[in-house]
Amino acid sequence: MAHTKSAQKRIRQTEVRTERNRAAKSRIRTLRKKVSEAISSGDKAAASTALSALSSAVDKAAKTNLIHSNKAANIKSKASKALAGVGA
Image (tube, rainbow, N blue to C red):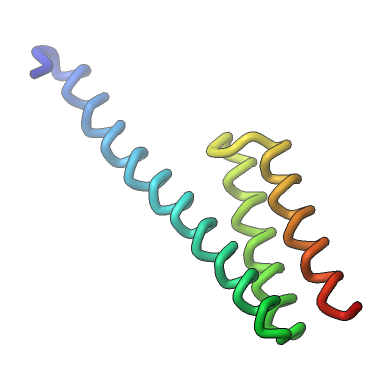
């Protein structure tokens, strides 16, 4: 256990940040699944709205360095490419 007040505060801050980061990553995984399900069902309108939400969440995660900016681009690119294949 930490001895100084500042170390105790850092522990509290780390717990809060860890929980926030875990929730954000979980949200991204959930949104990826929603996009995939909408694409597999053939519902292009639902897939495009889900893709919009996914892009927003991924951009926010990349902005706060939760995920790397290249990973964010890869996630959005793969989802967009899959959506483009629905109409074909």
